View (cartoon, rainbow over the protein chains, first blue to last red):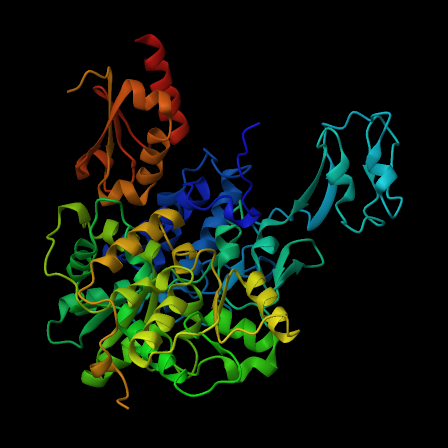
Length: 512
Length: 85
């Protein structure tokens, strides 16, 4: 039989345009249009009807439930927290406060929309209809807890007794027993999601590291992050109306290539961003180059212990909280986003810097005390695309010039898993002749934790450790539009087109 | 246009890409039989057809226009036409 390959639960919907994706994108695009049309906040009650059609429920049992869900998602799109429905207040309470170019989002960034949550079972081994109640019934024979009985004409698993050892799953001749997991909880690498008293998914915000993978794993669109798209739209409108206003800079994460259609070049994307009203667009790979040099330099001295990469905020938070002893091993350098923003603010302290990337953790990072002064807003690629659509910017028809020259090939490679490690290793070799750096890497937070466990136990002794929260690295981020494999190809292609392979060491490095 | 019997045009403007056109064209290209019988073309955006992305993605099969084209609908339609050739 043909092996179709089984993906991890939380990767199965990635790269597929589902009705969940469609709801999210329609909502973002209509939200921006609402603001661009200069409608009064009091007209917000009409916005949901631009997104769903009453009387024709497409996502849920009835239009009224869809309406509640869409209202909560509009709140999140405006950067506000969802309203507790038991509070018996309007779902658009205080929405007028979000009609501003001032930053409004606060933590927690990732939220469960209870109206949408289906309370799916947490983690169960269940018997499906394929069970034939066979004579051999190896399932009950191998069960170490005697949890399987045959009350009717099929096997039944006593959930109280079941320890999810999966032995019955392995031996059933009909493959009739299966493990059913909750996709959001399965996506969460730090096990921050369980159930509340009523069975709804609940995110333990003190554990959550805002990687956002649950938001693209829930098949019912019941988890969403907060967006700054409304405030950025206001900032752009104010900027376009007042010519002598402060400058707006967009800094774009290395995974941007290929996100907006295969025929759209990186130069077209930059031109599209300028047409929105940004004064300048810059590659965040510039900051990545900076980080490469800083980290490569560390290997000049004897380490004795490993050095962890610092570009993925979710990985850094996870590593530091799970293994406090390793906190000092993670590089203290800023992320490429902050390095790039820093460069801009050094020359123009008045500038507003908007980071655009695949990442939800960067939204969190931009709220922290150390970073808030450098990065003003964070958008995802999906949110940027909604802006293009609402502004009627058609990327394939835009100019190809000027050529983008902010970064090296290695810096541009940061978006793919092992790209950060490769950049550091190759630079250390090129600049210092260091050739024996032992490298370990992991993508997804659960894999990162396994990797750290191995190091803590002394099973592995790496010199350099790269952690990435998203599968495949940043190209697998929740804010992407292209499938991770397509995006990874485009990242490699754009890296190959860079003027130089290595970061410009003389300019960027602290000269030794 | 070519010796293949059916022409499929998928709009690859930003409006339609945002609403799933890339995934749709990938789905069409991954079907061997469709490759055999159809020429798959990318077409540029005409904003008026998709009503600023509200009715995206836009697909044209021979001369018939499909709006808010879902992959499952388009694939079924294409296979129906292949059968009738």
